[in-house]
Length: 129
Ligand code: THU
Image (cartoon, rainbow, N blue to C red):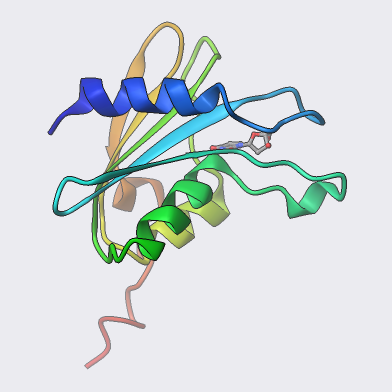
């Protein structure tokens, strides 16, 4: 697991965030089971609710490249404490596995499994028998 490289990629892509409405830039990296990594930044819109979070932009790039299983996600923002993915992003990421999620802020980081952030995402649906 190459956390330092993925975190550097996330800070880099954060610089390209399009966030004129909130002024809040986010960078994300998703990592596939073959260790390919894909970057995303938030893309805001005048019609605010159409904003795309950094995590889902990165995920879209990964899926378009053929990825079906994630092993890691990194999210960075210039906040004292790390931010964490919104509920919608948790759900969308959970479609592609139970990656480790590294959340990075200015003064530290935290690491979770996605399943800790969104318990029971597929129980009773994908696991039906
Ligand atoms: N945002 C993300 O891109 N990812 C997160 O995990 C939290 C929030 C974006 C959405 C919006 O453009 C801005 O941050 C403020 O919420």
